Length: 176
Image 1 (cartoon, rainbow, N blue to C red):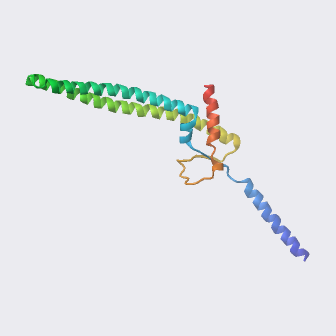
Image 2 (cartoon, one colour):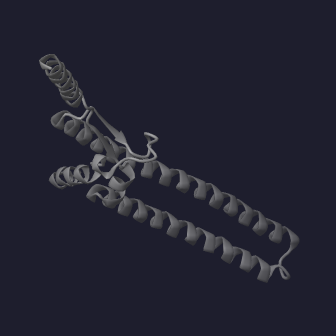
Image 3 (cartoon, rainbow, N blue to C red):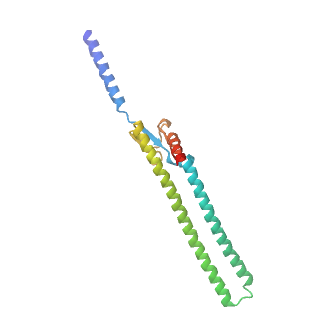
């Protein structure tokens, strides 16, 4: 009987020791939603506002050029009956050139807009990555993943540290 109790106690202690060892090796993992940081942080909102202002400025310039071309077309249509064929062809050629210039300007503005947006987002990402790295080292995280990029289809909310990252980022952004 005493042997059975000793064996039972030894087995219980063995399992308790294994469980404690496993608990000590548990990986601490965090998830960060970068899109939410871009949408809700002070820097993200400022970048969005800057991008919108730039886009509105470009749009206004393009609209003015488009209206100018539209006015030239209307003028040509009104004067077509009284113009010589050569004058008509010259005006039509000028409108085609301006239309092509307008299309090129649209493409350049679109490319410039995308470049500005990418640069602002890259700056924010770099700042956030520094904060994530510091937090990971300080708080002993094994790994911190970007929620959308890591391929996780589900993760408990307890792993999401985005709000803490946003708070930390807003503090550092205000100091700048």
